[in-house]
Length: 225
Image (cartoon, rainbow, N blue to C red; front, top):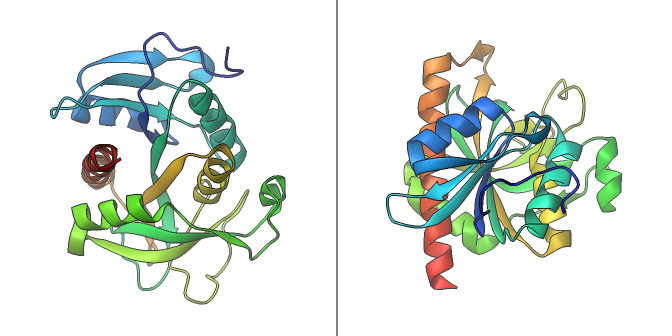
C-alpha cells in the first residue's frame, strides 16, 4: 500500500499532476466523463475516469512544494502511473506575460531539496523529449518553450540568465520521474508576471487549456508507444 495515497478507484497509467486540490477538481470536471474521486487522503484530492476520447486518465493533486510532489509521484508510480504532465503555476520573468503558457525545456535547481535527487544548485533536469514535443504540437504558438528554475521557499529576486519562470515543483517532478523510470513533462501558467497577478477566471481558463493539451499529448504518446 502506498504511504500517502489511499486510492478508492483505479489509477490510470497517464496522470496530470497539479499542486492545488481545487485545480484537480476543476480539471477532472473539464476533462473526464463521470470522474470518480480516487484519493482524498491528506487533502490530496485525486480523480480518475475516461476522457472524451475514451482514454483512462488520473488527475492528482500533489500539494505544495517539490518534496510533496516527489512523494506523491512515488506513490503514483507504485499504483501504476507511467506518464505524467505537471500543470501548475509559476512566477514569470521578462519576457513572460501574465496568463502565458510555458513549456519547461529544463528545470534548474535553486535551493536545498534538490540535493535529495543528487543535484547541486545550478544543476538541471530535462523533461521527456517525446512528451515535450507532443505538448509543443498541441499548444503551438500559444506556449513559450523555456528553461525554468525551481525553488523551495521564496522565489529568486531576479531570474538567472535565460530563465523565464520560477516555480516550486517542476524540478522535483522531472528528477523523481527520472529516478522512477517515468515519462514526464510540464505546462506552467504564468500566474504572476510583470508585477501583475492573473485573475481567478483567467487562471481557470489557462488551466483548462493546459490540461486539455496535457491530456491530448499523453494520449498520443500512449498510442505511439
